Length: 497
Ligand code: NDP
Image 1 (tube, helix red, strand yellow):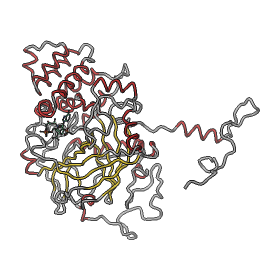
Image 2 (cartoon, helix red, strand yellow):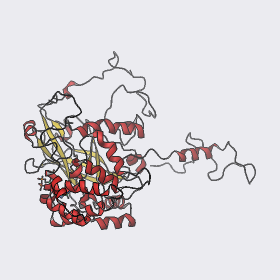
Image 3 (cartoon, rainbow, N blue to C red):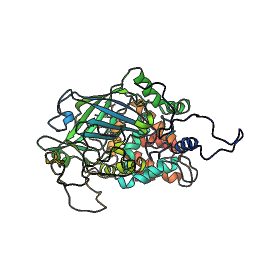
Image 4 (spheres, rainbow, N blue to C red):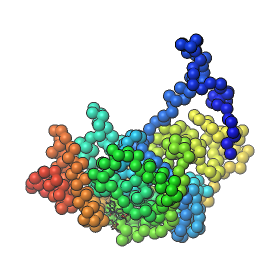
């Protein structure tokens, strides 16, 4: 219960008598420097913004509950999954990727699907997207790729030329480009899309055996997307469509739900998989790796304060729990480093003490000091380990089986493993197998619309190079895009394809 008749005070607690008039000499001023209250108000206001996330800046989020509905204890010893019926609190942040904080929710873009599970064994973050794959498979390309999704350095405008130039020069992007260009690139808010952990992770069982795992969150609201023209219309009508849709649904108690499922791959299967099972541009076919039920997530609470709980939320693939672990996926390995690094820059080294990020269970370590240390800093307890005074220890029972790697050759050019350069089979299957006739039509229209924005002296070169990729995935697709762009398909393009 809030106390009644509370006094207005400075941040240091001094009651103040007046709120709207500066202290002046005479009724016409000037203003006295001793009006500290005025300085404090303005100085705080001037510092209200923290650095915008360099990607995923526009987002919305909610709290909810995750409930285990199926026994997967043969794969994982994670306490969360130890019993059907177990529950934990979750936080989700949905986002677009390339736009700034004020950009429109219905932009064609992948959507972030970042989750924090507050478990008794620590916070587990699954920081995924609404797509099962990504544009690149090596983290060293990330900054270059993202620059092409942001603004042109001279015009300060988004540039289809930069985007398609980069994609056409990086054919591994094709799979994600096709998903992006389908209507799944403009989902109808956040409730009607799937989420994917995207990377290959691993699970460790009680017997300390490791299997490779992919996580899928299937929307129980059903898939629903905007067509390209509908999304464009909504950008003008309500740029905050997805934020509004989520808040209104939860406020009406129409709680959105997703079914969590996993795919599991053994080491043996990984060795015989036709592609690199740790390649973020590839999926694992459902027929070979069927979805296994795990649980249900329900979102049922709008955060009380957006800045405190969503803007300051910090998710990181580095945050796993016992029984769930990483894989050699290069993108995952890169993100283990870059996400906490970004949070340290944006929120400070003690970002995990911010209430929304804080593990609600015991956290014991010897990290001390640093900017904005607000949790008592370990008090008078020892700040080094080992020591003769406390009983904090490293618990070896949590030790994982070692990850066995299949090579000991360190090199930059490790990219010619079997299937590594097949950028076309899976996009082809997406087009022929996963998409309906209507999906195919809309995808082609969206590609033609987006590629029509390519301009400048390199236009034909970029268009032709990208057309070759579409042809390699599927000839019908290549022909339809070429026709839409008014490009005559000559022998040269077909030969390259
Ligand atoms: P399946 O027919 O068993 O599965 C196809 C999957 O494609 C379904 O999960 C479906 O999701 C999803 N899908 C349908 N339309 C689109 C779209 N426009 N964009 C993204 N996903 C879509 O096939 P396979 O497992 O053999 O995979 C065939 C192709 O399907 C893959 O090459 C890949 O491109 C795509 N795909 C596969 C996924 C996987 O994990 N196996 C996941 C997502 C896509 P839903 O059930 O929600 O409608």
